[in-house]
Image 1 (cartoon, rainbow, N blue to C red):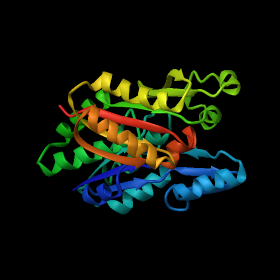
Image 2: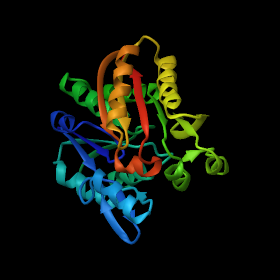
Image 3: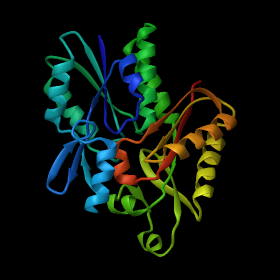
Length: 280
């Protein structure tokens, strides 16, 4: 049987986890001297409550190789293949941990670690397509080729409501800390070659939201797309964005998702983004 694993930096609807039989390995969250497992010891609401009450912006770390070994051995049996799909290796060591675990278990299990080159809802769509292809009788090689197509064509564009989390995390390239301290700006962040890159800045929240949709539309045009709106503690804004997306893009499949803690910890509350790629 084909087993699908993603890490906690991926965003996937809860119902998809069951429908497409997806296992999630959580990200480690460090608040001061206390450690938590994303989604297990710490919910999204708990995360923001702790951040607000303590004034501490937490640190995240990838699952250890041993955590991967434990998960792989728990979910798989001899003869199974595990497709282990992970957040871009340019922003996290999660993929490397999966590779080390796969090497340790190579005599017992067939494990294929995959660098998604992205994260968030892109990984959710990848899981969906993997399972749909497998159920349609596709070979592992065909599935890997499809994942490579998605990886090369997915677009992720985000805007942040505050620069504080991103400045402290250091995960966004070319973030002008001095400028951020002087004026209230709303950066537009794009995923470029596996890295989060600040493409431009605007001066109001509404302009930034409009610009996110403009960039996505420029990139996908009128092609049929899978699209997700992702957010951090901004569900109402995400719903408004999805309404605009529905009027602008030619949609095949869509969903709204709250950003995982592993991502939100680096970008902060109020983040809104669109993940989209052409399905053909």
